[in-house]
Structure formats: C-alpha cells, structure tokens
Image (cartoon, each protein chain N blue to C red):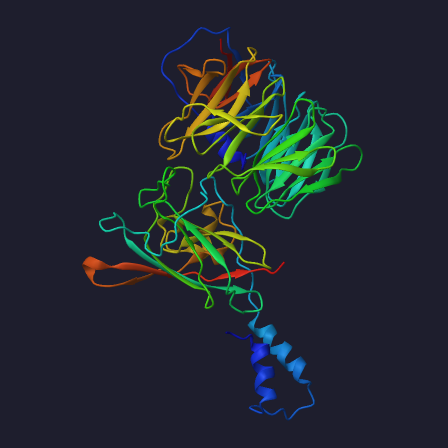
Length: 316
Length: 207
C-alpha cells in the first residue's frame, strides 16, 4: 500500500442488502475516529483519531493505550501476521517496531530518507520488508538491532505491493514502474520479472498451497500466475472503473475476498468474493458503511465507527 | 552542442577571448562560476497510483472541444551543474478537467524525448480536483542515462486551495513536498480564448 490515507480510503465502503452475522462486538473508542485497522488475529485495532493521534485498542474489552501523539507523522502501520508486533513507518523514513502487548523496548531506526510507504512482516515476524516513496524495497533482520539484509533494486517508482510465498522461498514485489519482480529469499537475487502490466499492482497474494500468485491493481482485474513456471494462467473478469485494492483468502481456500475502489473516488468501494474454481463472483452485501476490514481466521470482519463507538461484525 | 559555464570559460581562455589579470588559477575561477550556476534538484513527489506505461508521444494532449481551461506547459531539463540533459525521456500525465485519469486509454498522457536542447512544451488543459487529492497537479517522470530517475508533481499557484497564498498554504495538500513545486500561472490571450501558461524546469541528479 502506498500510504495510510490510501489504505483507509480503500476500506470505506457502503452496500445495500444486509446478511446474517454473529452478534457484533462494540467497544468505546478513546477518541473520535473515522479510520481503524484490525490486527490479523482480531485481538486489537489500531485507531487513527481525528486529532491525528494513534491508539491501540484491545478487543473486545476496549482497554487502550496511546501509541503515538498527534505530532508524530505516521505514514504507514502494519501488524505482524501473528499480531504480536506492530511496525510504524514515518514521513522522515524512520521505522519503529513495537510489541503489540506493550512489553519490551521499541526498536527504532532510520530505514530510508523518504517517507515510508510499505511495511510487511515475514511470517516468522523476524524480518521486515520496508519501502519508501520512489525508493527500492529493503529487507531488515529484526533480531537485536535491526540490520539491512538486502536492497531489491528496481527501475523507478518504489514498491506498490509485496507478498511472500507460504514456504518463504519467494518474495514478489509489484513495482511503481508496473513490473512484478520475483526474488529468491535465499540470495535476494531477482530471478524473474513480469512486465505485462501497464498499470500498478496494488495487491499480491499467494494461494495457501503456494501454487499460484494472484495480482490485482489498477487494471481492474485479478491475474493468476503459476508459481512453478512464473507464467500467467488466467485473468478473472474486470470490474471496470475500479482498482483491486486488497486480496485475502477465506477459510474455503478456493475463495478470495477482493476489495475494489472506484478509480475516480466518487463511488464507495465494493467487495467481491471470487470462487477460483468457477471464476464466479458474489458481492459482499452489508447495510452499514465500514471503516475497516480484515480477514481473521478465514472470515471477513468489518467494522464501522459512529462517533466514539466501534462496532465489529463477523460476516458469514 | 551546449557548454557548461566552466567549459565555456575554459574555451574562451584557450582562444584568448578573455585574459586573467589575477593570480587565481583559471580552473578555480571556472569552478567558482560553476558554483554560482549550480541548480538544486527538483524535489521528488510520489509516482501516484495511476502511472501507465507505453503512453504515446504527443505534444498536443488537448483535443478540439475538450472541456477545461487550455494550459500551455513548458520547461527545460537540467542537471545540477546547470547543463541541459540532452538525452532525457519525459513522461507527463494528469487528469482531465473533471479530475478523472484515463485508465483504459491514454488521454492526457504523453512520453516526450526533448532532444539536444532538452526543452519541452505541451498543450493540455488545467487538471481537475478529485476526492482523494487536495490540489490540481501534473505528474512527471524523467529518466536519462547517468541520472537518477526524477519523479515529481507540479502544482498551480492559482489553485483555490491555496487561498491566493501558496507560500503559506501549500501544506494544505500533505503530498506537496516543497513550495518550489507550486508554479506561477500566467494568463494569456483574449477573453474568449485565454490560456494558462506555466513554466516548469526540471533538475536531475547525477548517479
């Protein structure tokens, strides 16, 4: 994702028909907030307050702590996949990693001279991908004092999206120059690149079995690649006028939840669930305006805030 | 062919066109002159989500009948020594006057190769505002052998967002990284055929 504001914009959506869901969780927020981000485990939510301060709220009890006051210029936030760590990127190129339970000292370092746009924890939480505006992606070893493992050169434009294969062997980055590059994580050498896209890829996701890579972006469609050969297999039908912003696999591994945002920014985003075996899609229909969303344990969680109350619903 | 100040000074001296009545070495004087001509690299901005490769080469982005105020946009590409960059490739893209990028096609997108004089000039329209961005802007990507790619955006001092005071208010758009990117706008032409005229020079860093 390019920056926090874009991410939050992608998450605001509104649909029409309600579907049944378990009883929603409601928590009082520490401030007026329009944007939140759920942790991958659903145990916490990062809350961006109207005054630009950032708080971490525990779910479902609502206890909270201030992460950053209003004068810190945060550009990106990302949880580790187990929810135990939180990485924050700043406008001045600084990165900070903290434990999400508040224990231990924060590790902070100057990772770049430009604004941090993209943070991605590897599955083991021990390495962090960092990219800054217009600059190549970098890999940082987090044990002890963070150290630079590798810089992944590109042509220009930085990184718009990144994913690591389930077996950890591949890191794939969607460049601002529209090229999708494959790196061998044993050597950090680029071993493949796909330059068939004319527009950026905003979302990359490997299938849980690691056999396929899904890429989606400004061309409004999802493209499926075979990981073994690197070749393009097929494309799902486009959603004209929209860009793919997020791709997440649901508990049925053949289904992916895809978030689309309107290129003109005039219509609310919408979500589709694609069945990869049939190539058919089903719209996610809800009767409220989500302010955040995440796939937790294979299920779609959506939340909305009305003033200082956050309501989280688990979708069927 | 073009020369830097230093090269010109040294050539003049070589041909006796100037004499030096001081003990300062010619090379020092040339460097001092160069120092005065050095240019500050153009501040970078983000590429934005809707960059599109393989745009056509055209200097006329505005088609007959297009809505919006005509805009004549021009400039020259320099390096930090003040010399023109003769082999640059310049990509420019923007929204239409309603704030819409052409994603399916290439309206208001161009790739130019300015050549030895490194100058460019395009005819387009004033871009519109759109919901995710505060200010009107034009995107630039400049590449040249031996130089760092330059990715930036140009803004208009007349943008209503600035309330007539871009010095004070340019930070209203959080993506504007420098006041220098907000350019003055000249209005030319008769009442019914006015054109906005903007000059935007670009300065590249060497590798």
